[in-house]
Length: 510
Image (tube, rainbow, N blue to C red; front, top):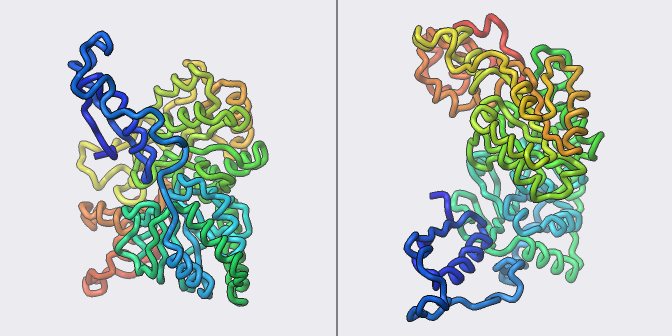
């Protein structure tokens, strides 16, 4: 279920042809893992020419150098007539937006994306592994948190290699769309699609750029007002985010929003914001990514469409091996204590190979621990008596710093909000010298990922009886399940909780 193709290989004469095909399959879009299983019978068979050649010959169906340039993707551009129609749609639109997704990253289409955004004057954003395809300090870039206001006025969305799914609300409120994807697999039938283009994003963008230049066409004069609105909304979004974090700069235990702001600023000061970042921890995954400003495609990696736990350990090891530049700008892995509990011992591998990685552990004492304060109650009252006082918590304040210091890591525990920056600087400097670092940061367990106040989580928490549900859980249920007869049964209106605001003692009670 997780592979593109699997094949059982039973004879040495088949090895070369299937290995060749495996690489082709893995590297064709959408790229993905391939599994070859080599049977013991085949592995024990004498290798030709010691064995008598099979009916297929020594290497069945194998052609050396079957493709002269194996590093080039097996892909193509779009129908020229369709390119003309797409260009006309984009240039006639008053308020278009471009969403660049995974396919832009895999096509190495960042330079073409920037050029087209500048030429056509279209505000552009990146999603998932494509973050940085258009540098997030570029004047034509807008962040997804600024998109809410822009989407209300947008009249055309162009998706490039975009896997539109749960995290985009399946495009439920999107206007007309032009879809460009390298595979029909990523042309979505649930979008109001004006044109569906199957082609490599890099090639299609080049076709659009060349045609626009050849025809010397210009976007409508009103387009500049749209660009300015996107820039204004982006600036306002940054300012709101910074101000929100600043509010908690003295909060103890450390607030994940303030931590995120300091982390981003420290990397900007030390490395120009060029560090590769692996996003793992559940709570920190909601707070830190908006503060980061990716400069190149693939700079920020996460579990994509999955809710992974612990993946950041192995991903950071892979990134540090693959990118020599990490010696100058170490990898940052944003971990939660749950992820460290699952995969933390693999940090020994990073240490053994002197990999330049800083593992930042946001320690809030458990799995999805903020649900205790927002839904289950201060002492897990909504659970059975056997779980009171424990719930889904870990032992309090586990010293992950001491654990990994014993292995040989550079390690610190951070408890003071004004000490984060200095600790990060020391950790990064140690990582530069090849000493893998672990920072154990004690964060406020009552501050959770904003999704705990979403429809999905409200339904997941539906098993909690109303009289046992903590106050924030009540407010979320009252606001989100508006179809229920709240007024009829006398439940008053309640303000929707602010996820950034630490849960008060009173809110922890039913």
